[in-house]
Figure 1 (cartoon, one colour):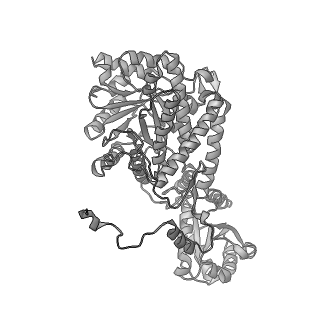
Figure 2 (cartoon, helix red, strand yellow):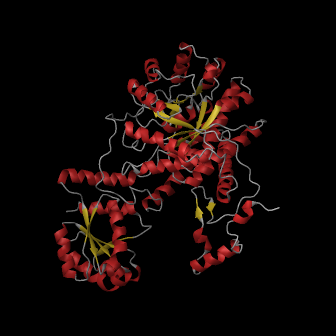
Figure 3 (cartoon, rainbow, N blue to C red):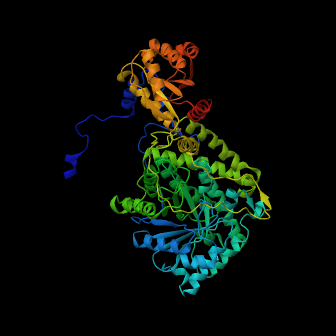
Amino acid sequence: MTTETDDLRLAADFAPAGEADWRKLVDGVLKGAAFEKLVGKTYDGLEIQPIYPRAKHAAPVAGRAPSAPWQIMQRVDHPDPAKANAQALIDLENGATGLSLVFAGSNAAHGFGLAANANAVARALDGVHLDAAIAIELQLGDSLSPASLVADIVKQRGITAAACDIRFGLDPIGDAAVRGASTHDASTLGGNSGALVRQLHEAGFKGPFFAADGRVVHDAGGSEAQELAFVLASGVAYLRALEAEGIALETARGMIYGRLAADTDQFLTLAKFRSLRRLWARVEEACGLAPKPLFISGETAWRMLTRRDPYVNMLRATIAVFAAGLGGANAVTVLPHTTALGLPDAFARRVARNTQLVLLEESNLARVADPAAGAGGVEALTSGLCSAAWALFQEIEKAGGVGAALQTGLIQSKVAAVKTVRDANIARRRDVLTGASEFPNLNEAAVAVEALAPVAPQPIDKASLTFAALAPIRLADGFEKLRDRSDALLERQGQRPSVFLANLGTAADFTARATFARSFFEAGGIAAIDGQGGADPAALADAYRASGAAIACLCSSDKVYADAAVPAAKALQAAGARHIYLAGRGGEQEAALREAGIGSFVFAGGDALKTLADAYAHLESA
């Protein structure tokens, strides 16, 4: 029996091709280079092959209900509760299906947030129908009181607790990890939170109550497996706290949910969300329970945000939401694109909200459950992350649990090791930060944010436990500090520091390296002034003097450098250049080039942050 589709088979007129055929073509392109050149690695050491076959017999990872959208959460973090309330109502009227109440001093408050008092909470929730199909998520700091305050508001309004969809967000472990201190010892980091959960549960709230928050590790520069292991270790610690309160594990596991950061590595983010479900199912099985899907809340990553060219953050958020949604997140919060600059205004909040609405309503991303199931690359990453995270989780457990592992610095040392490698890759621009380390715009217009200064969280009084904090970072910070330095010079002197691009030969010779050099120097705030090209050293020296730049960079092809670089460098040195760079590597000519006056070479893979910092030293040497 034939069907209509038998006549429409894709590639039916082509001979079948297999991996061997593909490898033959690849070997022709590599021209003798090792195939391993095409194999990437994650910060957990997982190999990423250039091509994968289909993963046969792979089953979808159970997550959201089929075709169910994730909750579109919107941050409520304005310190003025009246303004926070106005923002919340606008968000709910325009597509948000949940509110994330961020309290001052919480793990991800970033200097803003609601005050933890009854008046502030009541005012922020004025007009919000807590018994409607609106999700509420709390992001708490060291104070657990907002959880009780929200519960009191529900009672005062005469609402049935079970009718509310409230995730209370208790996370004393994550709070202690970020602060590096706790009023409790390592074995009781949860404090009295287990008792509070019991009270809320007995009042009729269905939860979940505890948040096992991986953002703590992600914000500090950790890897995906480290983030997952921290979530597992925190979740198990909360299970123990609930069990100590006499709550059966069958009930306790539904009182815990996970939080993960979503960033621009689309496939790793997607695999990370899938992995957490598999890992938590393994924890449940170890507890003698039949696995049930864990509720996972995702938030776009703080560390990926840039203060420079912040509109690129819109693209970053879109990729992150896409990955988290396809990875099975139950709820997603988008950090507005101006968050790194200050408290976002109405426009930034609208864009954050609409990012999710477009992906859900127009792209229909929630229509297919676990669409990555069976994709060889994603399945391999998922399995690899599960193995790496489980091994680290076991190491944490052997150390005495997450509290003891924080106290001894086990977790912090592993995160710091990854951060060191990550920092080096950012400095060398191997990890690209568009708008910051690559494709900078020195003439970008200022972006509006609310006129409020961020407030640092208060230190914990009488801490009985202290250790190294997992402090949040932003990856672009090193380049942005150089840009700040440029801005300060512009304000004081009326012009930015500059470099003269001494282009040699024709446009065909110098354009590629001049383009590279422009991006390289302007990533550090040093404006590039283009030379016209040519090979006459005297004309080059005159153009350099006319530019007003203090430093210069030769730009051309290796072929032109062989004949023209030495006389050009000598002419620039005689013309007063404080430091001369060459775009490219010195190669066999390096000794002669250095003798002629070239002090540094700029090339792909070089330490851009160090070279740019040294450039400022040369610029300020007069």
